[in-house]
Length: 429
Image 1 (cartoon, one colour):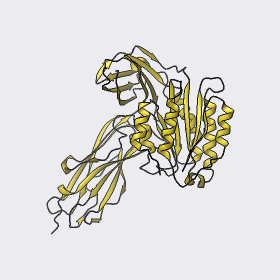
Image 2: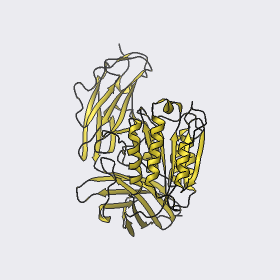
Image 3: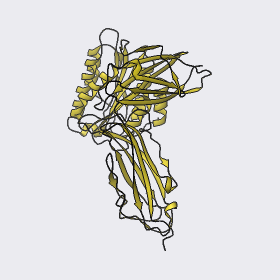
Image 4: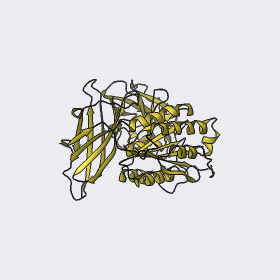
């Protein structure tokens, strides 16, 4: 007799941290910080309460979650055909399933990957069943929910250095990842600790210079891909063309990394020097990818610049290998220095790429480049996003350095598109 009970079957909702645009050459925004971009595994011990919550996802972009089934007992447990009696309907779908028709031995596990790809705004729900040969209870139901949003809103930078005045730099992009310009102050709602605040100033005209560090992956896998290095270098040069260089305004830094981190050119506004740095050979080892350490270096270098606007753009084809820093440390460092990270996943980056949470949690944006041919357009797109930031200033009621939660909601009055983002930062001292 099978002794395992479905209530004792361990089911975990895992966030894979991967969202890919269905549009050729573009990828990214999971809808800001509204819950669609979390990176923690959330145990769901009670079958009746099993739920996958995708949160806010931008239209025509997908986000994946996985249900992991593990047998903690001592007897085998057969799993039936998942979602047969109660299938999922669009905009939800099961994209991979290694559980149906299997028998889980003791301590064995399997996963079912679910995708949310909204094409209309609004909240949607659905559910699917997980049948098993459990003698006590043969069926569990998983609820699935998500909200489609027409706008991706990102709180890029939050400056509390001039308290009580708090300055927010916000980017708003559409379902094609293009910046949305022409929004009015009335299209924005800002909340501090759930209390609506009135902006003192509002502008979408960015005139202050920007400091941008470009971190380029030169690991062995990138170099082995035909034409990848050449395309990366050409795209980085195209990005430089979009900056206001050679006149003591915008500036950039070039970092190349693999097993070593090499600053090819420190921050400068001289375009010829930056171009030469991109062309210069990387001379370090290539059998590791010090992604986190390279981004840490880029954040610290950028944070020390005098320009008010700062960002890091990093490209890689995979996860970190060999760094001394952790993902959480990088995100905390980016937030502490108000440096958003714009990340590009090249090629087969996999569903658990480190690049997505780096962007989502820091106020930047993740892009997916299926091939290196897509890179030039993505780099130019990032430059346009950085050039179209909205600036809001308001007087904070915080004091004593207590944490504050900032929520920004955008409702476009013309087309009715909506989006939101949320960040927690240290308030005024």
